Image (cartoon, rainbow, N blue to C red; front, top):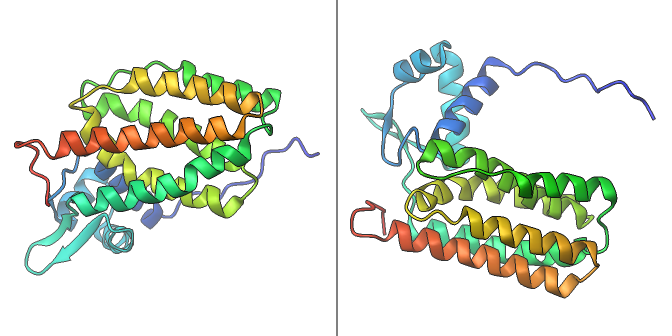
Length: 227
């Protein structure tokens, strides 16, 4: 086995612009409904307008922004339908991934999952939530990868990106990080013991409770969510 790390090509200007804008949207630094002008984005990221324009078109394909005549680009709203569709898919895929992952956990993966569980983050505001949610995503994607189905893992990765913005907004109103960390520990134990049905049950409960948290927070009278 080669010990030389594989060469990674540097990001293009468009990829840099897309990554920067995506991160700002997911962290709600660019809030739902906020207008993004190409000039503002270029100044924000210190890039030219051409890569910004291409990046915004890419983010439109991902559903994170939309083009509005005479206004430029607008950050997509989070709707009740969005929440249900994203979490419905997570509930279809992630419990099955956890069931298949049971018994596949080696010492290295246990160490990786335990490290994620041990990461302590507070969620008093969107900025402080991002560290926890990045670790949370890494945990869920790692479990999906253990299922042995690469396509399933890629779908979970994408769904976690889509749900990040929802979770940021939900966690800013109700800090569920402690509960989620406890659920992660219980899930790791079930995976290590090869308890597939228990792992599936724990994963289903965690995803379902996260959806409940998001819906409770974002349907509050002052949430400003689109129904």
